[in-house]
Length: 212
Ligand code: C5P
Image (cartoon, rainbow, N blue to C red):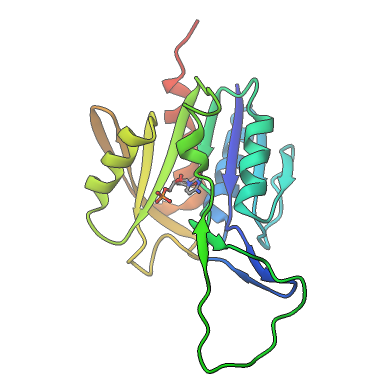
């Protein structure tokens, strides 16, 4: 099968030396790409900036902004069986990126932001993707309710939900504890390394593909 995985944060520039980003390390996405490859699948990894090594045998497409990630996913989608969108894409970006470094001046400054394109939300209706679609839901409260709502609204086959209010798992951590949410059931995976969690997610996702 052919897997497409998005990973890492995005960087939304303010000027040539500054950007808005988030705490995603990319570890979960890189573990997913490595696990899918390990299971014998063809893998495209589209990633924002991280310090991680690209897993061997994986086709790697580095991007910086949400817009670049959107275009890379759209362009690489033909032929993909399973798409796992794990990247922590910025929801908003500065409306303008200054051409020169902004100088310090007034005591206060207001930044105007606009929405970035919703990659997961574009998969079905804009890109026409018919394969297995896996989204992630990093929440700080009501984890199951938000994940279930996201599963329906974004037309996913599975949402991997985790509680990012806990410091021992999730962002920046080597371990994770997730809830797999399917249209008609849930399955909790106990706390484990991101590599082990990734293998479970890949197996579940591959099993969702209808056999011909
Ligand atoms: O709505 P929220 O940002 O919490 O959804 C998270 C999920 O949506 C993740 O799977 C993430 O990769 C994806 N996402 C995306 N494009 C965005 C924002 C989030 O693909 N602009």
